[in-house]
Length: 612
Image (cartoon, rainbow, N blue to C red):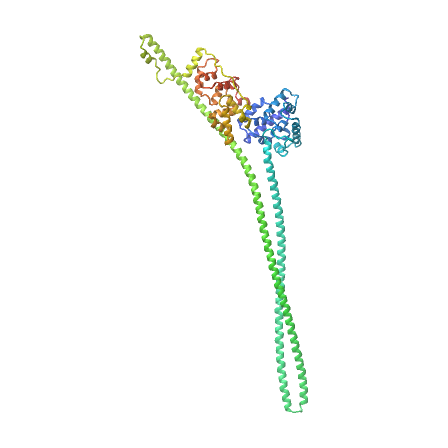
């Protein structure tokens, strides 16, 4: 980051970038309009950059600023600050010194002052070169997180926001890597499941085809068995019919032979021939019966073969049952894989819910910050309305005071005339005549300031301001620079002491919440006093405040009526703060603080007019 003091194109570009940066922070709800205007105003009197100035006030954190700054604009001082090796105040003093000695580089000044070691500077230059090598990246915070490291053998000296964010960054990377592994495992399981489903589908289709073939062959065999049984039954019936016919023929031949024998011997030869013929036919019939018997045995053999085929069919049915069991086991494996897939999806949803919860927590924190800012703006508007109402009441009281003064003057003149025209009265009567009429207010403030101006009293010498640094109290070292500034300013104004500071800081660390609420609750200061010192009086400057009285009223330390009564009787050149001390309204140290910070300067235009 170039910090040249010579105006030119680089300075113009830097100013435009800081304007765009302030607008981006305001749109993101990280800076209020009042804070943006204050930072732009203070930027002219400090060598710090716009973002560094906002971090010094405690308005934004490094993790909010550097995601909006490109890598080529991060300089060595910022690298040392975010890594915990340098403080912003030390960087500011080094930059002020560089303004007086422009020939020296910022790193040489830091080493010369003893804030860093030479090898620390070499380490920071190497970090800067890492950032420059990624020129064009708009989010330098993410790059610094990715390349985060510490100086060898040298832990950070101060609280490093980058180190705290690096742990969350590593956790996020682990979640992302684990999520990627889950996704790869799910994809692998899905591929395995799909492959197994395809294999099981192919096996099931093949089993169905085999079963269908077995069933078709079984039906064919059953049909063939039925056909053979029908043929065998027909052949057996035909053989039985032929055997019955042959027996009838034999009986007929026997009857004929007996008849022929009875007829005579003449026909014996003929009968013998016929008998031989019958015997031959009988032999033929016997052969036919033997053939039928063989056919019957063949049919029985075929029946046995059909029985064996039937046993094979039963074995096929058993094989089919085994295939169905394997199919059921495959379906059970598919169910188990689906259950594993559901568990992986649940783990993925859990990781996604954790990420969503982190994003929701961040959005809720930003929303709460916006709500607090809105509440402060509403309180500011209510304070303006109360101020206008108080001013109207002051005008009414002034009118009543003028009327009472006129009546008092008339009574005094009447009393003087009565004294001149009447004899001296007795002491009791004189007391009754000189008694002040009821209903006339006693202007104690006016009498006090009138007697002060008439007697020509010397101005009150206020005690010197004892403004102590942060190093005198250990509790102040644990809070942010903005909280340090608010508490030390209150202590310089004698509105809080060291025990009170320790009480407030301890309560804030224990209870948490908004620091201004804790300060109001434990310091017993008015809310408008806390608001005034937290803003450094810039709301009064923003609305055109020109006098110390405006700052005292905005701080809630003096009412408008008290200021009006004192100003009406204040001699020319008189000090309002000294008059408030004499009246017992302000502590001398408080009066000195406001006179030194808000009363000794020439009245200036409002911040809106200067920025307009």
